[in-house]
Length: 308
Image 1 (spheres, rainbow, N blue to C red):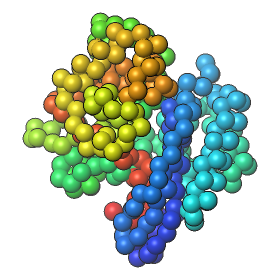
Image 2: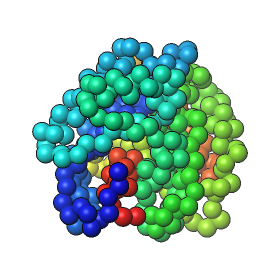
Image 3: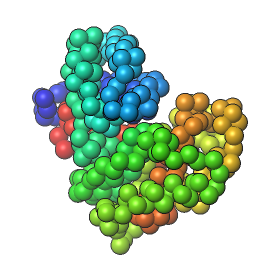
């Protein structure tokens, strides 16, 4: 259900998103035609990694998802949310038995789950993160990568590609510099059919959404991974992204686990995410990209409650 700005003068609400790598929630209020963020929550879930060889979500992951979504839902209610929305992206979109999870979640929490198409996922992240003026957006997730381009928050084109950090980690190991470039080339092959649609002849501002970008920001600045204050708006250059990829690729996994700037659950997949980013920056001719801590959670609530 969608509401116009005139219908919603004040409302406290929440969006819960089941991603391929994590479960996230944004509690916010809608007031004066604007979305005001109150608090964000995140829990590692690794839904995509739990898909078996037949593309089914295992019983243990279904139980875990129901438990964690239930905890988030209760937290949102405790904070005064009048309406809680639940949506899912790439991993659940790909799952052969998605209906089983939908039914289990509704029985456990009473929430109906909106499974977003790749196009809708790209639109949500764009609306949540894009700047004014001509803007491009890259959202690197666990199972897929979304591209979008628009002007003054008006989405002009978008697409979703089957390359995500967890998906690629399953397919191609990265243990050193040469293996980074091997994965980058694989990503460029996936990008090849669509890259011209998102390549502008004029300078364009690009924003990056997702854990790959926030992790690059914290490692580059040598700040703790939970220091969100200095992440949003940080600018990553193509040169710095390459430096991070090669540094981390040569680093033993045990050493990555000890890095204060890197969440433990991202340690094994972080280089694959950066390889995707390198491919995007090269193919789309992006010299630098601004990190955003806003994304599809904000976009979901904006599209539900605010006029676009």
